[in-house]
Image (tube, rainbow, N blue to C red):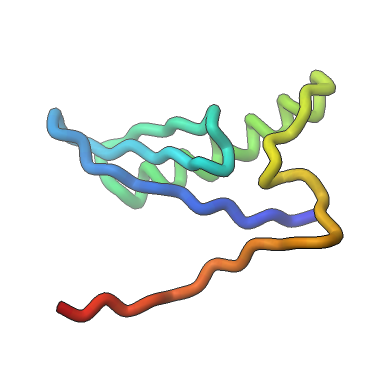
Length: 80
């Protein structure tokens, strides 16, 4: 099963970037650049999911199989 994860990249006032996700609350990754933070987030997300499964912990709701609903990412232009 492949799941897509929406990640937020935030520039930090003290420098660097932090990646987090509402879909995977334990995910926090830091790096010097936004692209490095995103790459680190991918690694951390995979390690978190692997750890949940290995230890028998419940996956966050975004990762649980759902037969009735699903989420899609869409693009919206903001002009102004």
